[in-house]
Structures are given as structure tokens and as C-alpha cells.
Length: 508
Image (tube, rainbow, N blue to C red; front, side):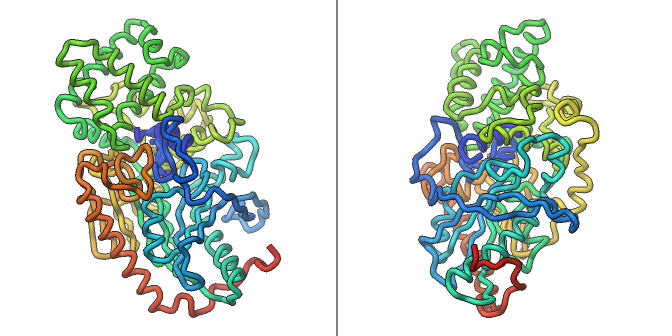
């Protein structure tokens, strides 16, 4: 729905389950949310990291806003019933975000499902992975890729699966207690689903839910500096100055040093470096970046070479980031492989709806000042053509931004996550919000544990610098879920007829 930057999120998201294109998952946004699965070869786990890998399919409507358009596409989803207290247990709907959805990951949601006797179902986001309506991802064909269409997909899926379950257990018209979960962009979808379809879910968890569309997202870079601390921040800023100086002198040898000689556009190259630094904090691995940089500065070792080693060994090597995905020419490819399509897709959502332009602040920036608004607008125009523009005012007007007026939505954010500044951080009775404070608490910590990449079985919290901080927030989340599910049951869920049938499930 990432450096946490738009691509990082996508890279991570694309590789593991893929969040927010550079920067998001869930997350991804360029670095997709770890809850969706993050990392390259060094982070890939076996089946034990997933509750299920068995694919299921349903027919989904292409355009929910045009009743005369009857086109459909196949939407992939997953189902896990091992913990389900049939037939009256709740249904946990786990939203997959801006990445290929390759299964139901074995994170903290599995622990909660076991506690509540819940089934888990997880539909893949339209266009991503194997759920693409079109073979060619031209700008014209991408017109149906939006959060609004995705929310209606979820509503239709919810009704479809309820009827499937009723047929499975020979029930007629029953309506289970549903609860929706999501991380990063999918966390925003989770909150927006409860906002727009409150009758279809008892509540929602918005893990690192980025509900605020932001045009110039300078707080992203500011948080990187705060999370880095004075010594590491100073080292990163010096690296930025040195690299900018070499590029200004016309030297491309620095790109070769970072293993990125094919990135002809200096802005693309600088975005790669900015994302590489940001993911260390977004996904809970600050020491992997800061320890060698601080040591190099103390010893008088070449800082650029030290940072280049981190980028190649950790960000590209272990984390699995794709250098090619930073190349605008690469993003213009309209027929990418399934494993690589998320980069172009998330950037379309960035350029058409939510922006999250991770521009450099005017003062005290960690990233290069060349990563500015113009860079992002030029990228959108170059990759998707004229007319694709993120009207964040209308996006926030439609959903409410951080003034979202829903109820029974719980927000959770990690203190080191730069994306938390696009989430709802002010708590209220109907919309509780919690900040998990620890040195390596980043994106979707409540679901993923620490660090957030690689993923942890059942969201293990033992590696958090303060496990008690995470466990305390998890207890609060569970208490909200318990209360809201109870209220749902008191209102007659599992006892009253549902909204009516649209499918003859018995024949499927």
C-alpha cells in the first residue's frame, strides 16, 4: 500500500510477498509491508513462514462503478481454517497490499486467530501478482487500479466468502463476525474498509496504516534523521554531500561503486541510495547501517565506500532490492513478469492517488536535495504520460486523512518507522492509536515483531530492543478485538440472515 520508500516497499513486497514503489505490506511503498513478506534470497523462508500456500480463485468485477461494464477477472485468495472454531468462529480478513500475495504469512495474526478460533482469508489486491485483469499494464489499462476499486473488491469478496462458508457448513443466511487486518497501504485499506463498509466488519486493525495521502512527504526524511541519531545522521549526510559532489563533477564511477552503473538518471540513482538508508530504520535493522558508518567515521575510513558496501551487501544482496526497478525506463515496461510488476503498479498508485513524494526537506536533509517534487512529477509523466497526477486533496477529502471519522479501528505504529507520519497517531476512544517505542520497532511491528525483515514466525517479539513495549500494545489490540467481536455477537451476528445471495455457492 516503500526505504520504506516507494520502491523499497515494492522491492521488499515484490520479493517476499511484496508495500508502500519506493519507500511499502505492506508496505513497500516501496518497501512493501513485511506482513506481506519481505526480502530477497537472504530473507526467504520455507513453508513454515506461511500458514498456507494453496491458491483459490473467485470471479471479480473489473469496474464496480459502471453497472453496464460486465467484465470480470480472476482474483486469487487464500484460506486457512486450522484454528477455525466452526461454524460460529469469527473470520479474519487479511488484506494483501501492493505486492504479489503468495500465501498467508505466519505472523502475529496467526497467534490471534488461534486465540479467537478464527478462520483467516486473504485476497490478493487487484492487478498485483496473479490477479491482474490485463496482460498489458498500459496506462489506459491501469485506470481500474485504485483504492476505491480495491475496497469494493474486498466487500464483494467478503460476501462471496461468507456464502462459500455457509454452503460448506450447511447454513442458510448466517453472517459471521468479521474483522479486517492490514499493514502499510493494506493497513490504510483496512481502516478505509471499516469507514466505508461498517456493516461488513466488526472492526479493523490498521498496522502502520498510511491513511493520510501526502504530496511533499518531508517528514519521512526527518524521521530517518531522528531514528539514525546524531552520529549516524551526520555520516549519512556527509555521504550524500560527497556523492552529490561526484555526480556534479560528471563522474559516473560512483555509480559503478554502488553496483548501479545502468542508472543513467542521477535522480534515480540518488533515490536508490535514499531508500537503502531508510529501510534500515523502517524494517528494524538500524545497526546494519549505522554501526559500520560510525566506525568508519571514527577511523577515517572512506564513508562512501563503506556505505556502498552496505548498499551492495545488505540492501541489494540480503534484502533483495532490485537496482533495475529504480530505472524509469524499466518502469515504463508494460509487460513485466509477475514477480516484477509491483514496481510499475505501485508507482501508478503513487502518481495517481496518494503521492507520498519522499522529497528532501529544505534544511538538514539526509537524502539528496535533488530528490525534490520536480523529480517525482517528471517520473510520473515519463512513466505514465500526461494526465496522471496525484490529487491528494481529493483522496484525503474522500477518506478523511488523519481526521478519518470511522469507529472501531485500532492503529499501531513503530516509533522508528518513517511511515508513521502518514498514519493516525492521535488516539481516541473510537479510534485508539498506539505507538510501539523501541530502537528497532519499525513498519508493522505489531504483526511482524522485530526486526520486521526478515519475517519472524508468529511475529516473535524477543528480538525487539524492548519486547515488553510491543507485547503491551499487542495486548491492547487483542482487548479491542475481543470487545468489538463481542459487541458484534450481541448484535446478532451468526444468528440473523445476511444481506442476500449473489452467487450459487453450492455449484462452485
